Image (cartoon, rainbow, N blue to C red; front, side, top):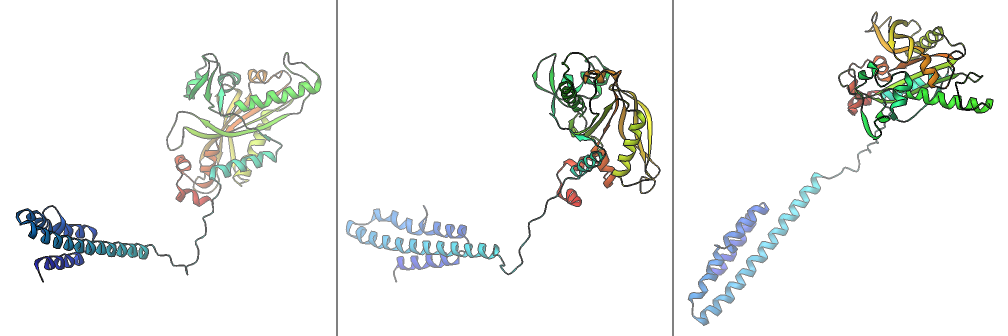
Length: 356
């Protein structure tokens, strides 16, 4: 066995000892690298006589081919071993029972909105829906809140591109604009049925307006009990003889049905809203549970202001009614015992799956 045969045998042994591709490449460098054993012999060919150089060169080429064959064989073995490890790690036990797809469910606030709509529908209220990008007139001015009214500053409004300085667009800060929009459509139909033109305030006969307007609203506010995006449900009942007494009866019936508690007590506290006069905050008191004995605010309400009735196209000398605004998010927190509003909007399935 000559030196080249010994070199080839040593290379095969080194390659066989390599357990990783990196170790194999390091072993290759010892024989075929720039300073490898076989490379040094190739460099030394220049010092030999022509005949000797020819014979030695052929022998070196033969040894090089043998080393490269051994190298490629070991590379293939290591690749196959790696593949088998991956297949073993990712193997599936086909005898195991299948995993069923998880079932989704309604968001707790969506459940509340459906419950609100169902209860008011049983009292004869329609459900209205409208744009979330509103005009300044519908969102403020038509609701007796002109441009210089201090109540506007309480809303910290999100304005959006479009419109004009005199009539800007904004993300609605409440769903009250739908009261105006719905009433205007209602009055338009009544005028058409009565054959009356669109001029002046309407004082003729028409069906009562009973409507709720649930939906998303937006204000610059964020903490444990407030969110920049939140839900609101406005209610409106307009007719010939709709009084504050009707408001108390309707809202008391709603709260007791919503919380399934006939012993629930309500309190109407005098307050101020630009679109109602007189106005009242509505508090509820639980008789049992962790909130027993506490008064909690759940809504704002009041008799619709005459200016708002006029902006609906109605004559306030003939039509009167009440309006209220409730927060479905707050009602959801109370119904399910949640103490942080932000949990509803973070999308954490660990929290939301409790309500499936």
